[in-house]
Picture 1 (cartoon, rainbow, N blue to C red):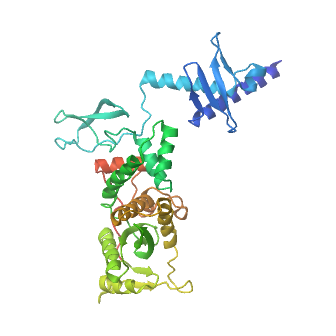
Picture 2: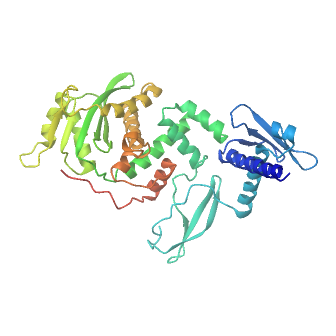
Picture 3: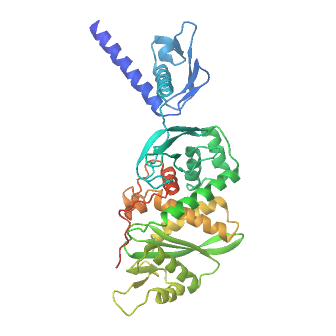
Amino acid sequence: MLVLKWVSALEADSRELRGLAILAQGSQIIRLSGLRYKVRSQSGNGSYLVAMNNFREWTCEWPDYTFRHVTCKHIHAVKFSLNLRRRITSENLDLSAPTIAPEICKFCGSAELVRRGFRKTKTGRIQRFSCKNCSHRFVVNTGFQKRHYDAKAITAALDLYFKGVSFRNIADHLKQFFGRKPSQSTVHDWLKRYVAVAKEHVDRIVPTASGFWHVDEMKVNVDGNLEWLWNLMDDDTRFCISSLISQRREAEDARRVFQDSKKKLQAMPIAVTHDGLQSYHEAFKNEFYTNTKPQSIEVRSISIRERGFNNRMERLNQTFRDRNKTQRGLDSRSSAQEMSEAIRVAYNFVRPHMALDGKTPAEAAGINLQLGQNRWQSLIQQASLRKVPRPNTKASSP
């Protein structure tokens, strides 16, 4: 008898743990009403109705309850979900992204700030701050104010775009998972607005580059015409330094890429590897040749038998091709430049790389913005606050 009771207790504990596992997945429990819930099967085959009967007892269609009349894992999951909902309501918990505190008061510049409650908005609560010096109360600019969609929906749309999903499918995804379907033009507006904010922020930070540059060009379809996208990246960190669109690939176009890279890194390269295009050679002489030492080295990677292979640029170029293939071309040169800059920001700061042990190129280049799990949301919040970390932002020089 004692053994049976012990086994029964173990089974009950196991059902509770499985109920917690269902709740932890986040999208398994669907609320039909206050007394009826649909819980999706963990195997992915269908779902089960959990409802309260006239005796105020929870019932379930799962065989564990139907034949054995025990509280099954689906009932436990619903109970845990209800307890969590009551706790959030009673304690007024905020489950949104962590608040980024301002460094100084925006009215008087004082650093004597304290938290002073919340401001309720349509998309959630925003932390309010109070200044001890001037007594002003204010909220920080998180970048998502006066939007009809919350930060999670907007950043999910950005993430899907850079994973190659079309605007139409992004809108459909938001309808399925967030309950509202924006227009394709709205998603495009989010892309232009927030990438511009993030780009202005990250371009003010100087990465710690190795000094070994790789440069390459590729064709892109711009309004039915083939134009050229120039990409320049750092060798060790895979950090994409510059992305520019041009109609031709003359020496002047290659010089623009080199000039932009020197401006961003505030340093001369140790070596520049290219595929042997004559325009690179002429641009290199004009931009990097000096009579003093140390001198930058030009490496022509014409074939795989030669030193200084330039093949790692192909992975970066493929990222652009994957996104451009979904769009099937770009309307204008300005939109092509916007797309190239957007991919550069996502490639450097959002997307981790296996070759860098799971780090982003920005982290490999010494830029640790502590973006957390939702990198887009944190990046936009930091950009809105203009809060640029001081350490690890010096460029290396040859």
